Image 1 (cartoon, rainbow, N blue to C red):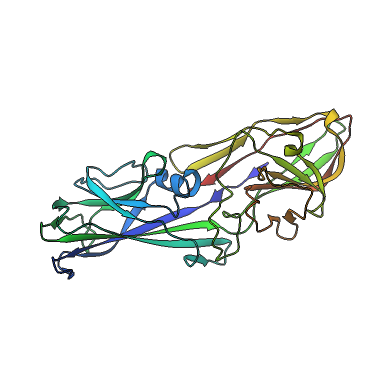
Image 2: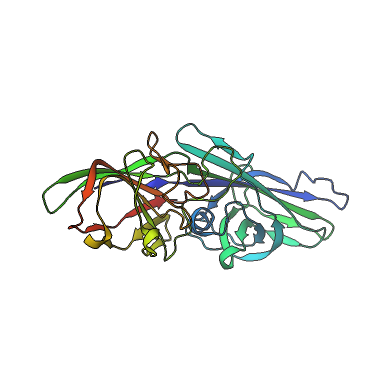
Length: 337
């Protein structure tokens, strides 16, 4: 099987404003947009693991560390203070279609500390999410206009405002990520293609839905089999009252691997012909007895909150399973952050 990765990316920048006691910006102390690092752990939390952390609440922290923040970092070098929260953001109005199969979300959070509440000299800044215990999303050393590390000093009669802009790029179309073939006991060869799915269940650009297809694995995941029209259901594992186990593993360096166990459909579980599409992880509430599940033109699940699976297999040579045969399947794929 030829494999390809599903790529998602992130970048960010921050700005610091210092205000006097009257609320006027002190330009000599303020800094414009400075590039920062979105950590591997932060990207995983926001895009895959978090409770909607992509759009959720973030907290700004300052620190006194002097080492450059890298993607492997799990915190600022010497975190000093924080607690300035920014409420959640929205997908609607922040999404731009890049016209290359991806969308980018530019999410701005402005975090204001009360006047005189934080006093001292600081050299680094970052943002964390309180979800999943607290995760370091992004951060970097404070730098001057030449890109050199510097510091900022906040006095008792001054106020600090931290502005963070994080940009996340995710797929909004189905992507061909693998090809291969399988051979049955009678030497019949079946060629297949593997398609990743858009990041969001409602993938239309500008939708307000933030439900994704790339998290939410559980011990009761499902498999659906469909005919070539993408409408006619041949089998749905939820109909037999069970599912199969699967998991998500992040290696800490930006590679996320999705793996299922090996599932066996025994002879007494029926036969079918013309199996063309196999969907992994549809919602347990989604019945395959209703309207069409798949758009066969784009190899994509329909735009629906129930379409929460990230992977679709298309058998270019439709499979036939006789009632005398068993059918064994498993799947894995990776996401690069």
